[in-house]
Length: 630
Image (cartoon, rainbow, N blue to C red; front, side, top):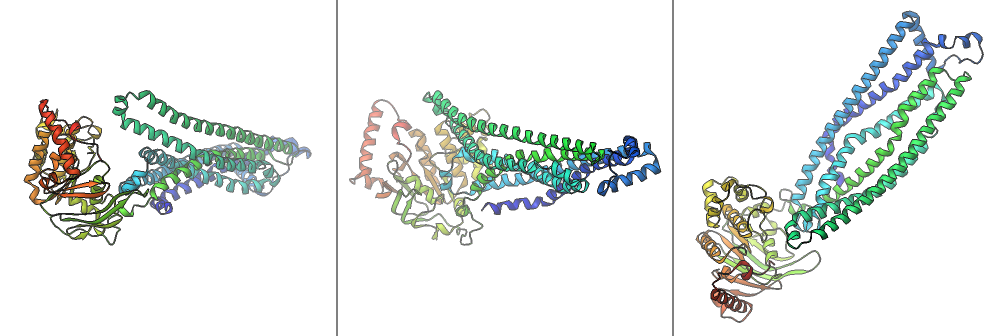
């Protein structure tokens, strides 16, 4: 649960403790200033200000008692010893010194809190990224990319601001009340009750506001996530949008999402405006009430001038931070929402992708890539069956081809062999060991693959090819690209192997992306090679050269070749024909071509098409010779 992830704050407890201590010291220094002012007014200047009162004995301020008596008595003694002028100078220096110390403490409080929060957030970002990287593919299939981006950026930033400022602000407001209340009560209990009479109303309004704004923040966060998701999706599919002239539709779609976010934000601003207006009115009423009764009692001699100034100053120091509790609670509400959204991601189970924490997992023994599949079945989380009772084997040095219409389950079978998903029933063994008991990372180190949609990073050609083998030499790099029939094309690029391919390989053609992905898989030099429709975007001549290069190294690995082209699978040692998640035919090309069934029908159809194309003087294109990805 999320509580287990909050342990990341433990490493910063000392800094937060120092920040709180500094804040407490600064609060004490700040509240000491009005007391010094009171000592000067009632202890040093009282004789001059209230001479008539003390001489006449009527209507003047009473002699200070209690805390005021202690403070003013000390000030009088100091004034008698040093003189009035020197005492006033020392009082001024003391006030400046206390203010400077309060400012220094405030600086240290902010610095330590900011340092602690930045360290916590940096750790949280790293944990989030690592967690997302370990989540099962099924979880990523369910989650929206834009929403994940929003949670990892906007929500994390909200949490950072809360940890850096609001945590300490809440403590500061409470501490001001806890320290100021006894001081004011020691001066005058009745005046204290009057000065704080509206505080319950201020705090109640803040709590009610917090409850209302928390729900609104949840709606606003979800609206922002939807807007981010629309933006991310549109930028990713920009070329498709332009190809179908759908700019106006997509702009309108984004406008709707942005409008929804705007409306939620507008409601938030309205609620904030109502709260600030009410809290300002209440705080000003509290100040006015205190000054009215304070002036009245001071005029009657029941409250000294120093006490009146102290109450007014201290109230000013306390009331506005308490009033800010509304803003702090608002930000706290947003932080609670953000923390919950982050927690939803962190609470997603990642055990199925973990290696080191699985005590039953083990590294596969070094072998040659003998794969065996027995009675394999798999269904999606929705319950839809994809594979049913699939059985076959791939011996070391053997090439097995998978052929079938879209939706037959070929790509799903590949994902199961890579342990991107775990099968429901049946068995998959690698070199005699059950795949489900093996360490996932080690399994994938023994498997090189080209998936149905080859992905390239916005890096150089060499970095993309070396993704699976960072220590490969340039000679090995060239050998793999030559085998994939892409080396000559790379040399024609503007910067050769250092050419940047753009995001998702946008600067390359579909065939070039596929060939780079094949080169990447060949450079891995793993015992098992899986090519999932990896030749669909290349022409027949290029396909023949790549297949010839693959056949040269076929003896040292097991190869699984998924394709819709008969030209790609005709030379395989064994061909498996799939329909509706089952293997309906298997054998060599010559056997299946003469055996009634789906393979023979496909062979005849493609043979007629090739004959027609030859008559037209065409060699064929990937579009005419291949079907849609399954």
